Image 1 (cartoon, one colour):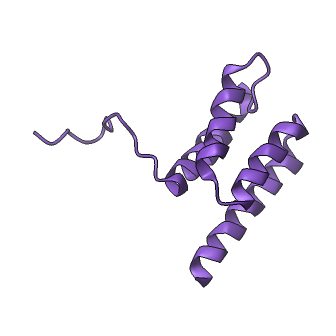
Image 2 (cartoon, rainbow, N blue to C red):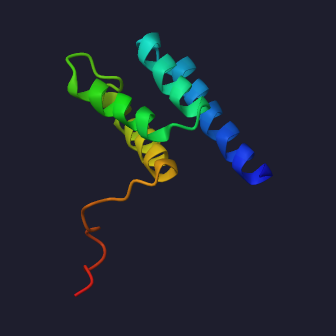
Image 3 (cartoon, one colour):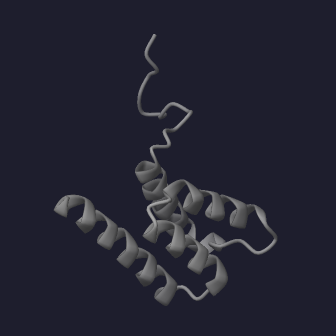
Length: 93
């Protein structure tokens, strides 16, 4: 239980750090934060994906690493697995 709470605190603090360090649309960040606070990680991923496809993306090109880190961590917590194979590993035959 403590480990799960600690992970949520770390995740939430990383989002807070991101919002403070990279000024952006606060409405979108509030949607993401609200989804994370209520443990609805799939919704948070959907908000990021939808935002990136819009004319005004949540993460700019210079913040691509942050996009991949945040989205990847949220996908992990949501239980979403990659549908492609890593270029470093051969797929199971």
